[in-house]
Length: 332
Image 1: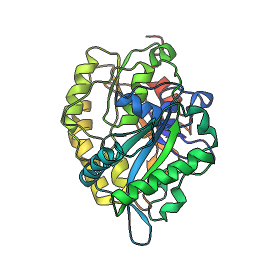
Image 2: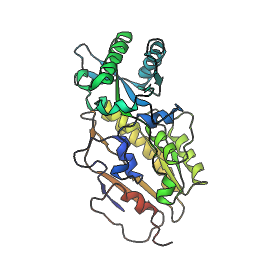
Image 3: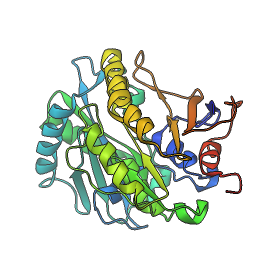
Image 4: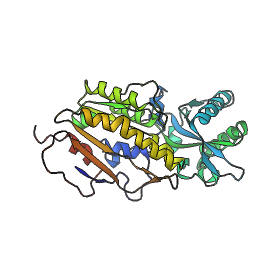
């Protein structure tokens, strides 16, 4: 079975948070306004409904002020230095946590009520543009965030740390309660791990794996096989193509897709037992030509081992539908 699915509603900004939650069964009214609180959960940072959280992305900034993505190894080194320096200079109640690669997390205590007036932009949608297009706006908190950005830039010349994806924590639905199925998740990206924990999906930490093209795909494969012994559904998230797309590196993206085929898809298809199904779907596009997320529909495929019927091609369907089709056993 194959078809296309619209994971980004008309007029919406394509973002992993909303796209992934829709594919996991969420309705529009259930979607959080931003991702940061769930990334904090993934890192073991305490979350409350009173605190404000911002994801911070480290970007390179050329002499003309234009943004560009930073290679992961260099980014991790710089974000570590910055977190140490900022720990001595941040205002009371502010804390900057280093995450993986170019990612950091800013927590501001008791500031959740001030989030409504703040507007930010996801930096990955503005690579090649002036960094000022991504500066926060809105009220006193917006001005303090701009000062935070300026202070960071003074400490790490040639880079800029941009807050976005702001949110406070609020409970989500449980995946098992929504679908009636217990699930395990294999992932490294903080947003996916945080959402999994919030939804009650088992999500082990896997040494040697990353949210980029340097991840250990074989470790992810074997972890998925182990989880399949305990859970009826296993979800495996791979993020490297998204990162290569943001870097506008089509060659790297194609090479990683070939690794996915060799190291994941072929072994999985070869070891599927009779009646087992495999769903392959992207949460959104990331275009190597622009480095930006795309809002166009994405393809999905559902394969069942030893299926004897006729393959079907479906018209454009809702983002909740592929999971329902995967889990539908036709009364079995």
